[in-house]
Length: 383
Image 1 (cartoon, rainbow, N blue to C red):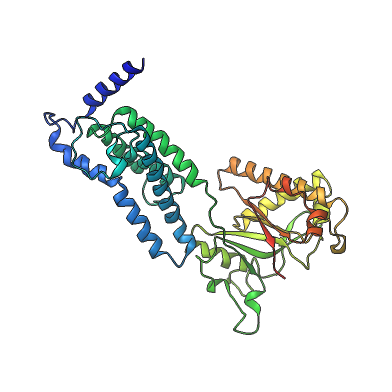
Image 2 (image 1 turned 180 degrees about the vertical axis):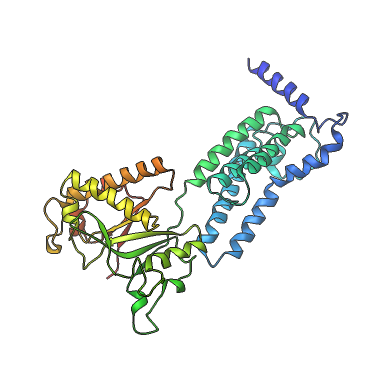
């Protein structure tokens, strides 16, 4: 059976090598297909990723997509090179040695061009790498690169199929690497300081400095709603002037990847409102629904819970708040997901700031359960 498969693989590969056979009527198009082949080469994408990393070396947020791209390409070289060195399958006889092959690349199985093209395809689409290029164009281009491996007689069909599987595996690994989170807090009173040294307005913030900005702070009310803590958060003091919310969110016009969340709570807020919200399932559900409306109405990308602290009697927390906090977080996560599915909008993020002290953690947090629902957690290590 294996011999039959091998014979069929060779026969099919030979018949499909339209630009590999010298007697083919399509041979005049060979150079065009070679150019297509080169567009998916590591000789193009490795230097490109290194150049872009260097250009954006002062901004880790902007450089990160290129760092991951470079990591994926090097990962591809390593895994394909090792596999080729072990299998050592010769290239098809119809192949012309008119491209540079180094070391294990002289062998055929699996197709490194294919694995790289598939990796690039999934990576570009998954990360929205080329925002201005339609996905159909990217799919057609890299799909053609894969096809060129057979059309030029570089590889057997089975080499290409194996390369597809390797490429999917590589991309699955790379795109799920945890991206850097540079989380910044902007306090609504920062723009109102009297001295020029410490005063900071939203317009003075570098839009690429942070991946997430938490607007501090909103209030959690006993009425199970969220409210701004300053009058000028939503509307400015003068006619037609913008509120602080809008001024911070405007930074996204320069950096569309920036996410702005509303942080509710804070040290002076303590447990006011949170006690009522977390008291029972009905209160939690009502608060979650009200939170979604408030966040969407004010164009926030998510909610940051800065409850200081559940379970802390000295901060006014009631006995039910440790388990109540877990239930609150679970319901918020659940309803954020449901709202995104129903509306087609990007899911609201759910994050938190937590205490670092052991006695606070033991009194107020069911850590393993909470981590299942938060997008990420920030531990407050400041004094």
